[in-house]
Image 1 (cartoon, rainbow, N blue to C red):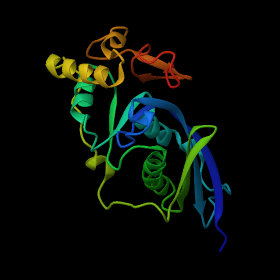
Image 2: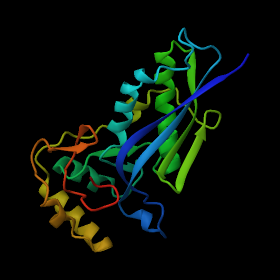
Image 3: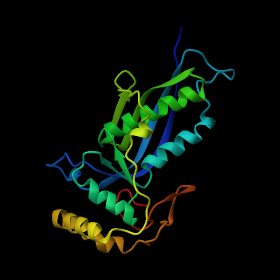
Image 4: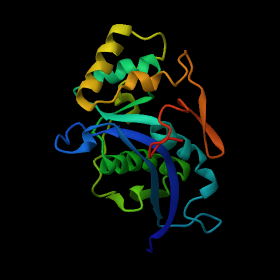
Length: 227
């Protein structure tokens, strides 16, 4: 029986990363990209409209992906500075995501596949699946993962993700120590940059395309991933 394929390109949003294991590279510092992903959908039988999947039914998938990557800071679960980043999140200085398997464009593609595949199976009554995902950092760099390469956990990935504290009043001593450490390592006075952003229980929404996302609108202005 033939296997039908269709593809969909979805913008994930502007995302920051820190690859702490890249000790000999500037990727060990916080940096970012505007991520774009391409999904391959497959099935053995088309639906009654002769479609693999209904592209109009992917809005919830897009929302899921944007929640993870749009105007967020992704770090590895074993990052040695994780407690400092958690404090910065609590202070309202970033929207932190802790990646269980680590960071990097390959891990981003893996995350997208592991979350998109069950979504598509549920959407189509298990008629379709996601066979491959490609993620671009920009027009020269991308990574691909295919389903036979993906390692799927029997546990719910959302349940395994570390829960972060709600944004509220910051523990000042932890934030100060963390910012001093960052400035010592990189020469960047993060505290002065943060003063440009409004501090409160709920950060102001920053526009992204035709919608808005929770984040500080001026915090990363002028960077390759700021809006």
